[in-house]
Length: 173
Image 1 (spheres, rainbow, N blue to C red):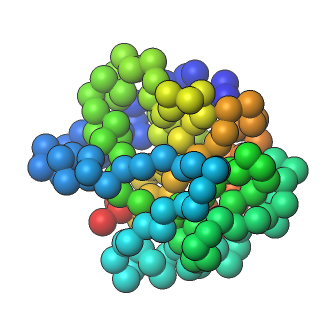
Image 2 (cartoon, rainbow, N blue to C red; image 1 turned 60 degrees about the vertical axis):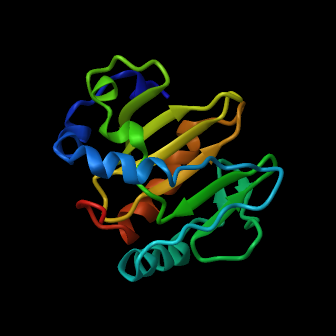
């Protein structure tokens, strides 16, 4: 997690230019992973859905030493590993904190920008002690819910190669 202690303003420069309307629209669509039930399947447009299907094909069989066990309902847009589950959801809306100036300036203790192995992430601490990571500067947003007590740096290291291979750098639509 040390890479998230060092604040990276450049990750969010492009997001700070988005209009406030985009922030309001995306705020309604955020949710967190819940290992006690099914994972909500995102509903992205066709282009992002295709990117997410490509990601599903290259995801690792193991993450942080845990075998892949996908959540219900079965979908190429969701994946899971272990119990309590590490849940990946591809094609989620942009998190509101990604355009929050307090985060970009390093003044939000519960949200930090950083990078792991060439993938930029927004880390958000959840009320239950878990963490939610969302990719930044990629053509699709990929969200990873990491339960409390799981080594999130190991999770992100294990997922970085697949994200780089399947989700090109750019601005998510």
